[in-house]
Image (cartoon, rainbow, N blue to C red; front, side, top):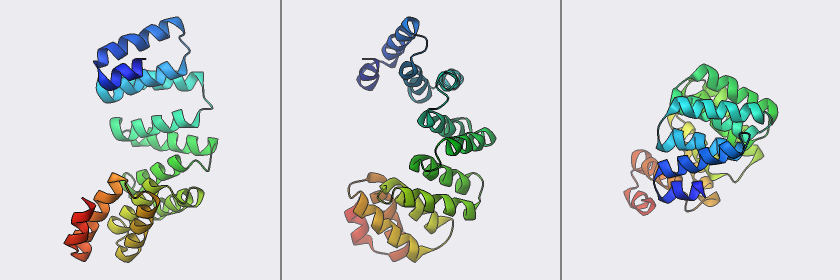
Length: 193
């Protein structure tokens, strides 16, 4: 119920409902993680979000998705790259073939560590594990375009991403920019927007 309130109503109402759920069951992982996300994305209280993520991970240390979400939080919200990298590595020890972890760790390696060789290796592992994941394909195409300067390879991967997710907005947007900047194909680019 709190998540529905959060999506269409006052985030403080969702906060009250989630806190009430935690008073009834302090170990409810779902309530902890939803409240952490509420603080992260809507109420923008990052210290509270971090405490809740840590508590949830303490209660369920085997949840790779929770560990992965925390790594992304550390990377994107706190810009704590040391802890983010350690947390991505922890997630990979928990499940070496989790495509979301592989994909986001590849982005991290490229954007935060400027390690193109390691990033490409992670992207390829992610795509090998989940060959039709349009987000991973789009991220890899963007990497090939921007970090590696491999324009022809990037175009092939963008086209694969479009086949995998023909309505995926980030792929359409990124490929449209690619077409404008590298192919001067404004007509096709316009169709993507």
